[in-house]
Image 1 (cartoon, one colour):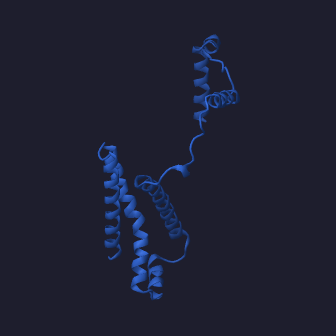
Image 2: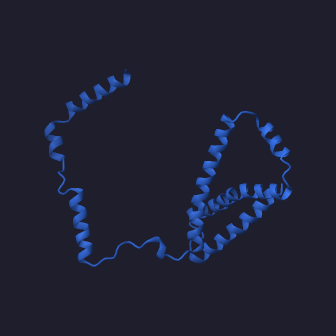
Image 3: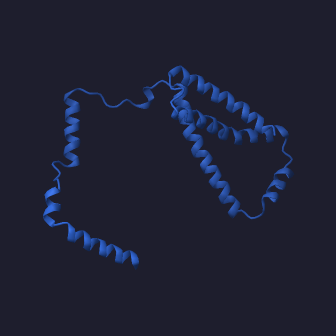
Length: 169
């Protein structure tokens, strides 16, 4: 109710201070429609023989390009994983301890357990190390092409080492 009253009073006060001529005088009419603008754009590009934008398939893959795509992918995967884990904790009956006991009762071999732990921790470590790399870029460091490749290789090495270390725990 208070919001409606505030809106009514605000409109009344605004109308009292602004005359209709002031609002109309400052309005700028649109000269063309969006369709006319697009037709003008394409006719200009055609008359100048400009090519269409290149497709992603013509670009050669580089380490920074692949790492950027993987960084976005791991971010999405980690967000989805945390969300699904949270939803399953709310919706699946039983406690964490009962689920842990169930996994232990499966008698999975140590190789499979370590592989699963590595597969779970690898995206987290990659996203963490690459995020630190991005923070360094925000500080203006490591922006030359050679430094991009060096930092990319360092991120990959640190990711593998930290993933192996955490999976061994």
